[in-house]
Length: 197
Image 1 (cartoon, rainbow, N blue to C red):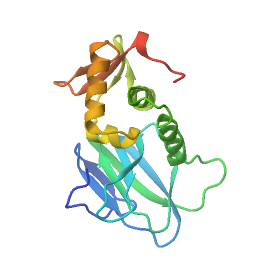
Image 2: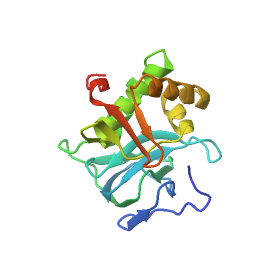
Image 3: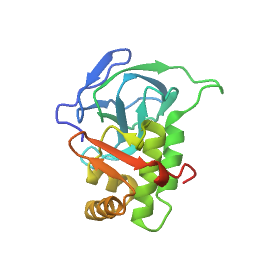
Image 4: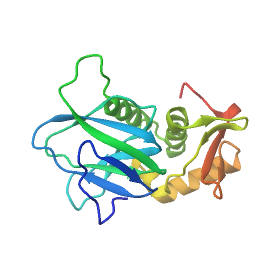
């Protein structure tokens, strides 16, 4: 969720955000490349087509995602903290071929998630992607140390919030996911995790 008090991010400034806090990166006058260096935490990178429209998730990034992000001309980027997060943003010259574009990787993965017809399969694919990229392996399974709102999941997988809520309930009942609301965690048990999606 983008806050009403969204600040303009300044390249090179170290930024600390609490969960759900969000900032806007001003529209670029010309195409540019950005390096988002995350020290701690997880952020959601988003954009919106118009100022008053809902934002669209582009990627989730953590300290393990190193690379560059292409900031297209006239697109406003939003950064939302999913967990307590510390990061900085640096403008970069046009990259050489050795630098990877982490945004393109995420866009590709999120696009594939929207392919299955059934919402429950799309939900399961999203959860598997999130635990692979942002989770931790534990004795119980693969654990995410944050929960996304059902409305955000619905936006990502292309369905309604109520469908997401029903699907999550179904996955919990069948033991395919374990959610601990007190600890704000979601676990995919080892026998349920499908690394090949």
